[in-house]
Amino acid sequence: MKIKSHIPNTITLLNLLSGVIGIIWVINGNILSGAYFIILAAIFDFFDGFAARILKVQSEIGKQLDSLADLISFGVLPGMILFQMAKANNGAEWLPYLTLIVPLLSAVRLAKFNLDTRQSDRFIGLPTPANALFISTLPYFAIKWSSTGEWLTSTIFLIGIAWIFSILLVVELPLIALKFKSYSLAANKFRYVLLAIGLALLLTYGLAGIPLVIIAYVGLSVIENRIITE
Image (cartoon, rainbow, N blue to C red; front, side, top):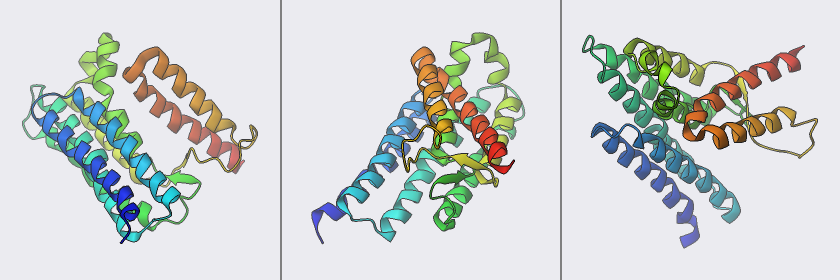
């Protein structure tokens, strides 16, 4: 077997390694570090598919390995971040475990994605990397807007976030995919608006802007769906 056929899978394993190390850091109390490992995993997740296409070595094992890595990096790791945040607050000891709906429905989401042929140009349900980025940057949002910190880090709010965004993972909601068949403004206006909003928020607020980017992403997708169906 040619060496180049192993390159995409090696990159996928780096995605998995990022997720595993991120979990270790979060368990050790470094909750803020989780976002960096999720971002690193997302970079590897992009380049493994890119490498497979460029090298023309796409394979079924690569597809399955990618999903397994994504489950750890974008399912278990964000679930652990929410769990540790909820655990840090005083309350019933069993409540934080309700946040673990995140890795469970992330697994369902990834399994559905592997079987769903409708997701070539649009996503059906929130992608796991977007969900993971939203969750992992909530602590940065709370620090940036300290007035929100008390309720944003409350156990009940965190459980609500876990369940709402986990449902978004598996719901039949078409969402924008940044896959350009052409660069026409008319055909891609919502993609360009999303990119502009995302860039502005990231440049202005850094990691604290990512939760707002994800909310804008879902909101723009809903608006686009309404326009398409009218």
